[in-house]
Length: 113
Length: 109
Image (cartoon, each protein chain N blue to C red):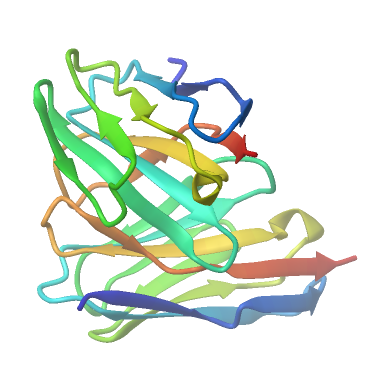
């Protein structure tokens, strides 16, 4: 099992550009989520999904879109990048919807100039 | 509002010097308390899940405990390879996990 994979590992964008961060898991997990990690802020939930076709907002959803067309994939789209979105982004998955440990990907370090 | 607070922010230990990390939580109807280890430049790695007050779990030099208000991660006779950031998270079962800001542990040889 590859676990949770994320691409790219690093990305630099200009303000206003859009892009998609990819996330995939091969563990047949129902629950998937996206977090951003900023110094002194901890991990903050952006969006999550409890199954294919079902997504919902987390704590900091503005400026981001998600979709879940398959169990395996959960891409995160930045619609119009802003410097405030400079961060490290982690995708995670969990066997069931809640109360279970999450498995994290290696992260994407995004810089918006 | 649900909240998770970790202390201390940073901790330096000599190899073999045991200590504890604290995770205080304010979560209505706790459904799970989680500990993760994060190495620089990597994603968090799962360590433990605790579900109810009084529960304890151990793995090598690490032992996690849970009360109704806080959790402790005890590190016994740490080694330099235990150096990492340790994250605590809680969920009330509402599909959302709340993370603390972590404790940066440095173990000196």
